[in-house]
Image (cartoon, rainbow over all chains, first blue to last red; front, side, top):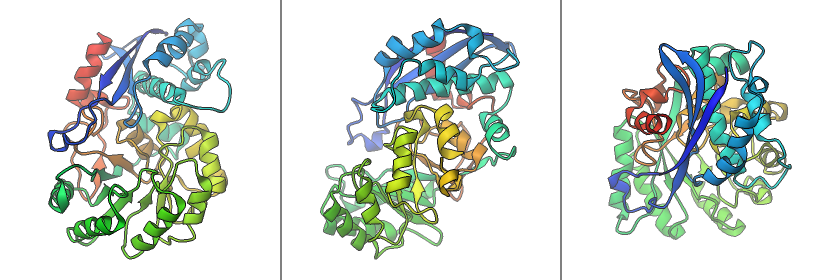
Length: 307
Length: 82
């Protein structure tokens, strides 16, 4: 088998009209299609991938470096031992040819997007859901198809008021979510307390609120919030300071007994490892949020992060 | 890396709200996944017909990541591939 073509396009990200106050209009992503010569159930197998929100389309990197490396490689060099399916780890190593370590930038997003499409194709060729393939190769063989999800939103927007925030949060609860998340740090601490308390009033037994500062606090502000947030029973306090400020995160742990969460803006195993080494994150209560689509893909994360 | 440092995969709840992380969560026993109910469409979210109940989704048995089960997303994908 072989990869016949890799197509990519930069696409806009749309937001629901209820959140049209937030300007996501300039945010883009890369959509990619890995077209193979394999036919399954009468249809050509195509693997698809895209990078998740928060970063932009990576078309230039994909077109100039990563797509040519895959298409110019000897097709057999990308295959597993059977010769009948892709080996995503070989494809990953091929993409990373002539890439120096460190300074990860956003090439991790380009590679993560292509890696997603390669795993999609690999599982389709194997005739299985990807969760099944991953459980067999890296887990205990038995997937758990029931997955916890929480609703992220609660952005600030002009004219929102407490009423706009609680209406949004209630709509998530009404749609079956028992954990909802809102932003903090876009208003004064006094105002944020009012917003948090208004949402907490909506919650019933077993329902929780998470808060997310999006990395905007300096250490004194992060600690002031930690003290205030300690008054509430929150699901987590997310990304208080800059994602790469491990000393801030470690100090924060001395001021917040509840759960902390961070990691979405760490794009390499080395950055993630530094968080674990130096960030004071506590395995008994804190949460890690590494996103494979932004961070070189599962072929990187599986070998060195999650496993 | 995590296991070597005393962390369980169940302490990971990835950012992003996409189906790839749902696959990893189901396959490896992560703690869950982010979801943006009203944002980043059609890319984020779940296959059509998947309902959230008590903050849990049950993933359908679709080949691959299962993008074909989300009609608005697959429309964009097919347009690129064909």
